[in-house]
Image 1 (cartoon, rainbow, N blue to C red):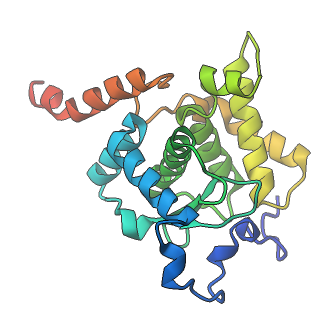
Image 2: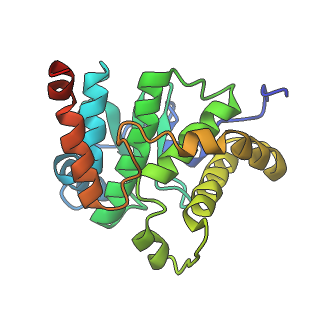
Length: 233
């Protein structure tokens, strides 16, 4: 499969503020009355209170990839179809300040993108040339971030019984790939299916799928106490 496409912009068109030629916004646009300030406040709250985000931040620090708010997050205006993204070139998470308006949404986006950052840290993902690497991280992010939780699906009026979570994860991973790579729906679907089982079952660093905040808090306690267990062996 030829994965080198000269006309593929890797989804950067969805994040116009990533354009380095774009002039910097004046200081006044960072005032208390802008989307940017609200985005920064919600980001800080997510980092301090979301058990999902706190576990991922701790795991990345333990892996030698400490995350700094000012360095590794950027609140920007984006295309209306996306809420966030992970820029592997700069190791930076983009939060779409014009599309994230509620704290619960911010928490999910921060978690989703931190999973990509965690994979980037631990697995040396080839984001631009290996579609399977991209698909695997998208599957993990959809599965572990709360994107496909029962409450999230209810809010979208999506109901299902058997394998509903798997279908939600598969669908969201597929749409994410199609948004940032110029490949056919059929090709993207085949790639997702090829890696789905192994990546769906890779729940690091949570240990298991966190269905609720309570699950995420338990996973955090378990992760933080892992060294004590190893010391007693």
